[in-house]
Length: 257
Image 1 (tube, rainbow, N blue to C red):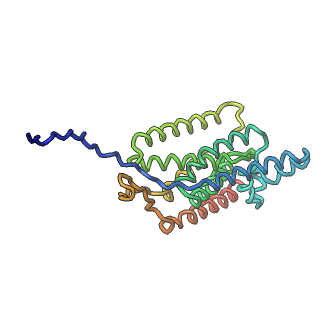
Image 2 (cartoon, rainbow, N blue to C red):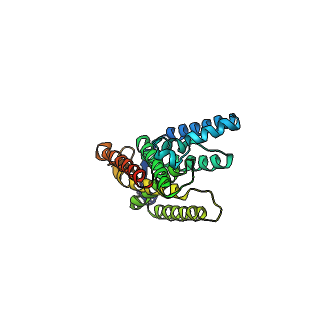
């Protein structure tokens, strides 16, 4: 007796695998380099005797009268000097956290532009609105912080709900930091923080990467995220921004100096 066709087991329905996003991240080598540089300067400062320490601070700090007399380099050098362990620990941790994120997403050139010009914006804001001498990398770090917030806001469709959560968290954190700086007896240079926030926001708005989805068939089920804002489109922004900063210092010198 011949047997009939054997029933074949039913195959389970095939569900398409969700596509995965792949974003090329840069190694945060400049972030680590800045951490090492700031740390070495801190060690060098603490290796000096009290008189030499005072001389170094007097030469590097943001001192309004000295800047109005032509020592403009202080707007830059003040960003790298920290006097006590808590100060450098707080700024170092913030730079480690936000610097790696910004450099990883923005790349080395954009990161350096935001860090330096954002930090200088903080120094210039402090020059205009704060009479007391000041030092520290806070203005530059707030610029990175602000730039990261701009990135998540601009790419809220790409990241989905995660972007909204990050933006809200960063707004609350910035508000708390500014409020803490306004507390009685605080030695925090709020003008530098606000200046850094504004500088990072403006710079990131124009030079941050513009990620777009690009389908990829190798490997399958993967979406490659490409940056559609190359250097040729935004190279003029740091030039214009630097010019505005210089004019602002000249104006402050003529009016306040």
